[in-house]
Length: 161
View (cartoon, one colour):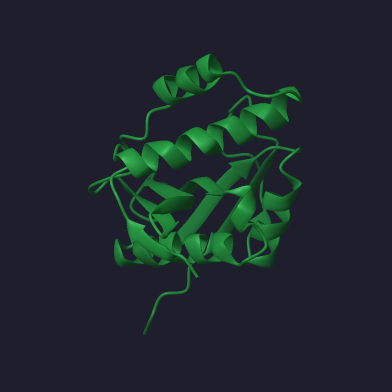
């Protein structure tokens, strides 16, 4: 299993995997390869400043110096963490890495006092929706008006005794 570490989302390795993440979701959305300009625009237009310090968390999975996945959460209120940027590179899919990344985010969110996690996703991200259901997330009513959100999920986080 690759090493999973909390990192600054502005670090070089984090930006590299985030570029792959955006390339993947833009390609799926448009049904054609994403352009570098589209990836650049998305990185600039949706910054990850709230995935660090006391505002949130960002984890990177890497092996032999190569970034293979990421996951983050922003702390939207005193009780809620919102998962975002959950991604595993194609060459590492099916290995359990996505579940391990989500578990790391959930555990860190609980350490910061969050008792629930939520997320939104799109229709075309079928694998993501299956993963979230497998991890105990259930579909809930919409909690935002994101133009890219078509499914909303939530989960109560188990607090340690």
